Length: 89
Image 1 (cartoon, rainbow, N blue to C red):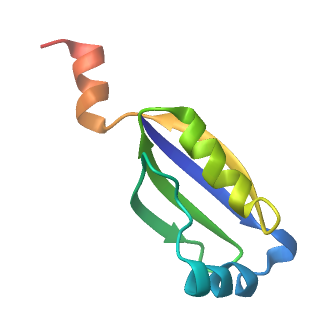
Image 2: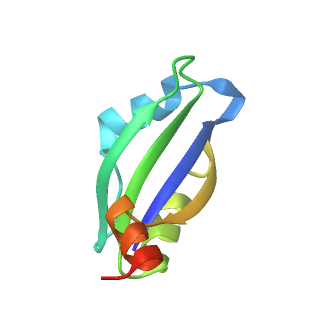
């Protein structure tokens, strides 16, 4: 399953997030895979695509960052999968 993760850095502060990432890495548990990310131009948030078979892995990762980041999670599919669902095969 793919998830678009919308992150808002607490108090708009990116520095603590990047410091932890530099020191400890992504902190992703087994079964969670980073796909891609984009950071907002004002450096106050991030959009990440993450992939896992079990939502519990995503929730464990969120718990490791929730002191610095507020999260919104949206399940997503690729454009190709959406077309297949809509138009069939």
